[in-house]
Length: 238
View 1 (cartoon, rainbow, N blue to C red):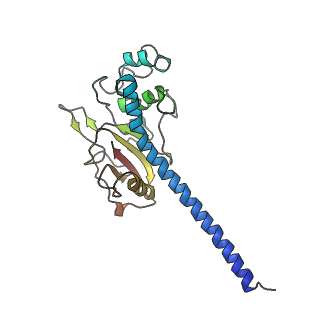
View 2: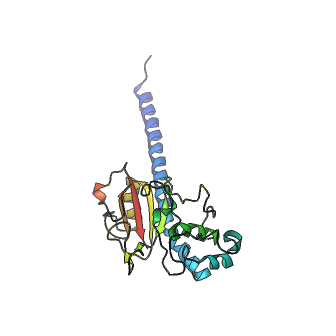
View 3: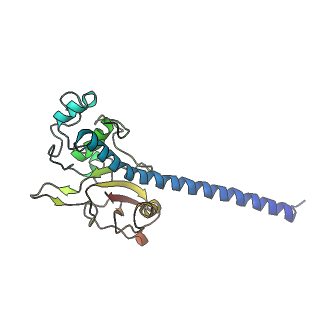
């Protein structure tokens, strides 16, 4: 005994509703991810300005003595827990030196971490209560992560190895006082992120993208050339 046309129609309607629900659910998940990525970028200025308002210093650039006096519970009285003798950068010079990828676990530095002011930035804003996460530099979970498990990093994009220092943003042509970069972002999300935060073109403006693994100085990739399933580093100038 076969199915009637009415029964078949009902089954098809149910299947359609189920598929529609799955697609809508995936769309909501993707939208939530993009919102999460966007918040990663938007939160960093709040960390910086909140820290400056509280300490009159830049997070990452603060001297060991000032760190010890301001946050002894985390940094120890001499500040050694928050700024080691080998930390790359000159304390108190108004520049947060180092690279966004110094926190390690990324595609640029092959996962290696470097103790720099840019890497310590996260420790300082966490110790001050502006951001969540481990304050122990040696903690395995110290590295800030985005919604896809990629590294989030911060830098000023200034090359202090030459005199006078020169601007050297990670993505060619970007201009800003500070830069936030996030790697391992799928192409489809990189495009949505640019549309949310900037001008909907990933090769120009304050938000740009380059393929995962790109070296410093690479030019932003145009939106039309981004592959949805590929992964990218997205940077935002602040």
